[in-house]
Structures are given as structure tokens and as C-alpha cells.
Amino acid sequence: MPATPSQRRGLMVLLAIILVILAIRLSLNPVTVPDPQPAEGPLANQLADHIDPNTAGVAELAAIPTLGEKRAEAIVEYREQYSSRHPGRLAFATLSDLEKISGIGTATTETLESYLIFPSATTRR
Image (cartoon, rainbow, N blue to C red):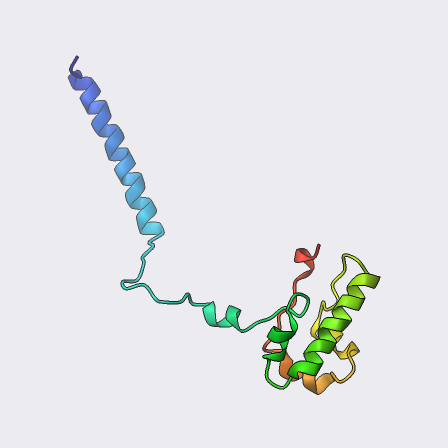
């Protein structure tokens, strides 16, 4: 059964309204994807360089310039001992917590600052 002229007009009005709404949304929120797309996202370099000392292994920590394997082992050992004494708590909440480890002082933590990241209070378990 074909549509009546009034039904066609109603459908045309409805389609026109939808097109106007879509045009307004597009003009208020234009989203474009660069062509060609970049190989890495804009924050890829920042995220790849930061290590969480609460989860990193000895090899990851030892790869940080000026830290070395012995200090990396000391960090992991301290973290494991702290976790056994304080279950559910993080050993390193701030950069200054690393100063509790023998051989790591203020000067060392200042050089490590750009390589480390610490979880915020909201991400703690």
C-alpha cells in the first residue's frame, strides 16, 4: 500500500529535522582524523619512559640511567619486604619514599624523577 501525500510530507519533515540536528552537531563538534595517521599517539613518548617502582622488575629499574643493577635490586628487595609487613599498601607512594633505601638520597631521587611515575591515591588497592 503506497504512502499518502500527508505521510510523505511528514516523513520529509522528519528527515529534514534529523539532517538539521546532525549538521548542528557536526558544526559544534568537528572531529577529523589526520591522513595519514601518525605512527604513535601524541603521548606515546611520555608514557613509554615512565616506570612505576611498585611494579617494575630489576631489569626495568636497572635500565634507568644512573640507577644501576645494585640499587634496582635494593628497590625490589625493599618493596617485597615492605609488602610482606604491610599487605595492601604501596611501598613507594612518592618520590621521597625511595630515600628510605640505602644508597639513594635526594640527589639520586632528583635524577630519577623524570623516569618514574607513582600511582595516585585513587588507584591504590
